Length: 221
Image 1: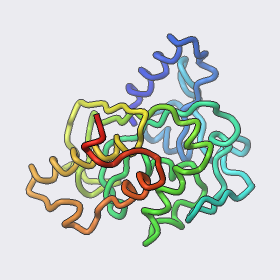
Image 2 (image 1 turned 30 degrees about the vertical axis):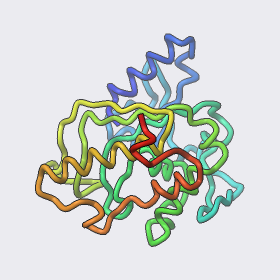
Image 3 (image 1 turned 90 degrees about the vertical axis):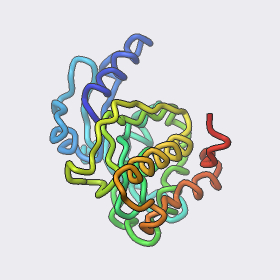
Image 4 (image 1 turned 90 degrees about the horizontal axis):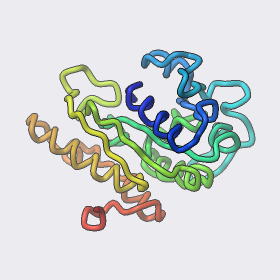
């Protein structure tokens, strides 16, 4: 997620009287943030922390939710009262789409365990976890650039400048819209659909069945 997008969100929160020292920008590892250009200590507008932090990161107990049996980040379960999810728009070699729902694989210590046949159910299940479901009040997708093939780490040829931000309180609806955009980009570049590539993002239907939000375009404004 681009630093400029996060900076704008943090400054908006401050205008709503949230103090900078109460705004935590986190990812799976602090090194993930620094490699993306974030200062390790944060800025005047927010602090940076990784889930590899010894106090705020992945700690017992194991939490079971369907397919998921993991240490969840203490940032999610204990520290933060409100979560704003800020993923990027990209396809994924296994999940098909990796936007709002799959980004919460960064909140568990063992996502590698779920990158197999169980990936779609695991994505839906991690979002069923009570803290994630209850505390995440807004999803803002940074689509300044979009990846439509070769994700989650594509070569530059599959990245397109979109100059777009998507926002919703509903992660399933936003992912459904993002899926449509990825398909538009694939078609424009003579690529088969995700369904045709056997990469249908089935976790959207599973998340909708779990009442996490609608995946039917007719029910999305």
